[in-house]
Amino acid sequence: MKFGIVVFPGSNCDHDVYHVAKHVLGHEAAFLWHKDTSFAGVDCVVLPGGFAHGDYLRAGAIARFSPIMKSVEAFAARGGLVFGICNGFQVLTEAGLLPGALVRNAGLKYICRDVHLRVERQDTAYTSRIKQGTILKIPIGHGDGCYFAPEEVLKELEEKRQVVFRYCDEGGQVTAGSNPNGSLRAIAGICNARGNVLGMMPHPDRCAEDVLGNAQGRRIFDSIVYTWELARRNRI
Amino acid sequence: MKARVFVTLKRGVLDPQGKTVCASLHQLGYREVTDVRVGKYMDVTLGGLPRREAEQRLKSMCEKLLANTVIEDYRFEIYEE
Image (cartoon, rainbow over all chains, first blue to last red; front, side):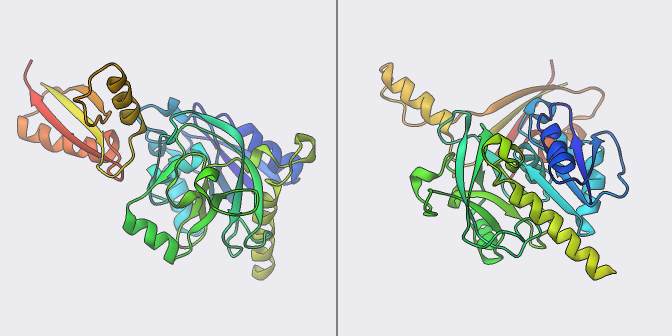
């Protein structure tokens, strides 16, 4: 399997994702410069964390017009896997590939710490190896991670089961105290209706191997690979 | 030709910055302040456009880039220097 990792000026988790894909999972990985207009043979495009274009104007606002985004949009429209982590999630909402927006954390501060997430569904490409209801401990690192969408959009997200990860406490309860940034409905990650595009604020790329003291993020990457292998077997 | 573009968070979108500024004003004794919303102001210089066309172009700029209409409202004023 081949991961394509988009590099915007200001991306800073591109190497983390590359490392996970190539050295932890043992799959192919390639950097895709934001000014490139095509990528061949990539099975999953990752928009990594960081501060693309300095987060000027709004996080992701400039990046969504980078030349490569046209190809990313076309890839997503064909059903390709597009995975946005943190800043990548912000880019996906700005690009309209995912609904809603990410605004300033309710507490105004940049937060960098572990949080707990409840996996709301297993039938996505990104959670195929994780049982629904599983609690994952994954770190966040963001200042603009408060998920916002108008009420009618939130309703639609729930109806179509597009909320994939929700902030919760250690026991899996969604409480005010377990929501680090004021996200509406404690949303930490969503997918599109088709399920091939996913964005999440927490960083599975920062906890994907034992040497880091936490390998729970790897389960998301393992799911992606598992989904890809299943699809390949079905094609043969 | 110049334009002043104002981008503000929509009503209903939490503005923690505005709330903090409001609380700070209260602390300084400005009790009459009932609410503060923090927004952005952009000074845009345009060249060689008739006014009507400039209005349309600015609207397009705001919709496409300067504001995120999911969370923000915008307005602009065009003026000659």
